[in-house]
Length: 184
Image (tube, rainbow, N blue to C red; front, side):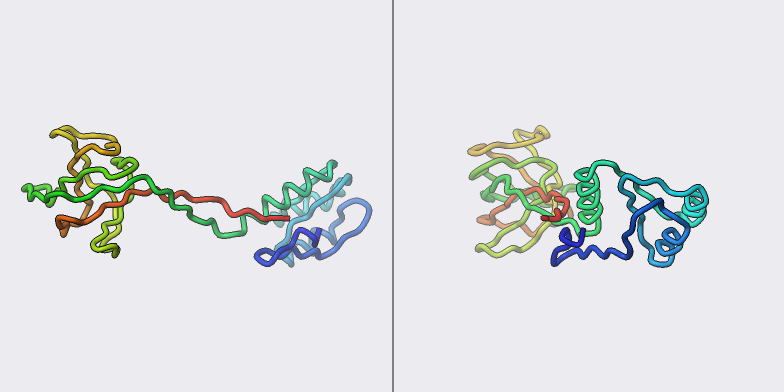
């Protein structure tokens, strides 16, 4: 089992032995805040009762591959998730409009990809990120649009931001949470 450890998560084996899981095993797990893994064994009746009382997790297996997979999943759960950013599209600001009760709306042409109403956006001015937020509204010909594709024109307002200028570029992207994986 220690071979499953890596530089990000270390697996520590407190005790191994043969025979049924006994009260001493449960007390060690309680004191160490550990789990008990049994392979082709069962806990003694008193050990099972003590484990329930002390809320010690006992996991029993009879197939070694399932045991390894479960330990890898448990180790993955200890790692911080990573975030992956997926580019969706870019739009060039051609003109800006002040609309009462809405704020500044950027009249844009989509340069590549797609802009979606639920996208996160980055406002670039001279290739420097000025603001990062979400699409407030996306309109095409005075109608709400769920998405606008490459080559089309649209109106984009950025939620809680109004300092958009002609020539700015709006980049749309989606951030996804990716579960960290233990490679072993």
